[in-house]
Image (cartoon, rainbow, N blue to C red; front, top):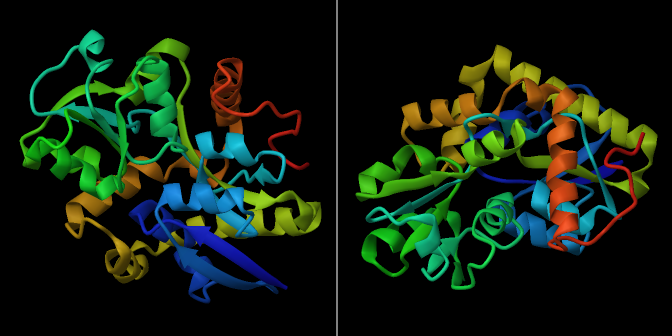
Length: 274
């Protein structure tokens, strides 16, 4: 059975999917992978382009009727949320009128920005790896940064205004759910559960053989510095990635909050298919 698979070129995703896509596991599926940035994946999910795909949890809110969440592969945790950065300190009240670059309107980062600064209208979408330079050059007043950018923004002479992950954690007491792996509901329970188990095996393999994953990660990474790659993986691939477990409460809270504010469509579909 052929399974189309979409995930990002970021180190956490290439680390997670290395074994699955490099013949390290036993399975009967034929996986056809495509690597795109997460906002592109979000928008491709709207078109049901992939059988299995990485998506922002905000993006999941738009495709929940067609996709369910898998228990493995998520980016969820503490101290790993998006940051708002600028060239100089700007307080929360000032942000409402500032031009802010974001990595996409379906990213969880943008959902958090809408919760933190609900009246912000001067929004500019751009690829996540272009934001810091745009802020540094003065093209925008502030930037909403994700992924490895949280480790490298000081190199651009930027200051952190707020860590939206920490803000969420203080507000809710819950970890921040950033993104997860989705599967088309019409694949059926048996196939979905098999794929979910394979993703967990792929993560376990990567944890046991991290050196094997390095060439693949560096081939696709925006930031090639080994220390940054290591920090990225350590931060975004954790116990919640192996199995979401109790982290599902955080996902439910994020989706409930977004639905309550009409920021995503209302859906009665369960998060998981089983």
